Amino acid sequence: MAAITNVRVRAFFIISITVVVVLLLLASAGNAAGEITDTYDYRVQSGDTLWEIAAEHGPQGVDRRRVVSAIQRINDLTTSGLQAGQVIEIPVITSS
Image (cartoon, rainbow, N blue to C red; front, side, top):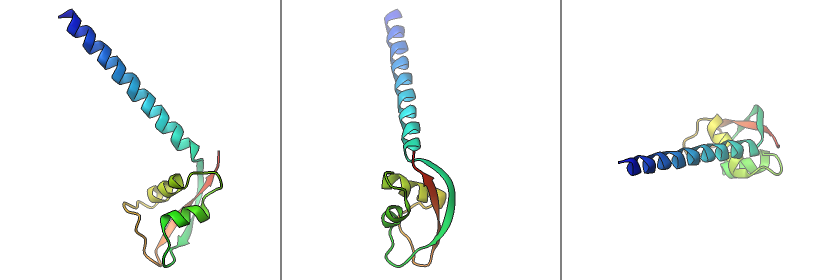
C-alpha cells in the first residue's frame, strides 16, 4: 500500500512540475511578442488577410503569428475571415 502511495505522490509531483513549466513557457511566449501599448482603427480592404495586415502593421522582428493572434484577440475574431469595409482595431506593439 505504501508503494502505491509513493507512486501517486511522485506522479502528482511530476505532473505539477510539468504544468508549472508549461505555464511559464506560455507566459514568456506572450511576452516575446512585445507589449500592446495602444490600438488604432483599420478599414479592411478587398482581398486583405490577417496575415498581410500583420505583416504590414506589425513591428519588425515580431512573429507575424503573434500579431495575428493579438488582432484576433482584440477584435474577438473567432475566424480569420474578414469583410471588405469592416473596421478592426490594430494593436500597437512595442517589440521587446
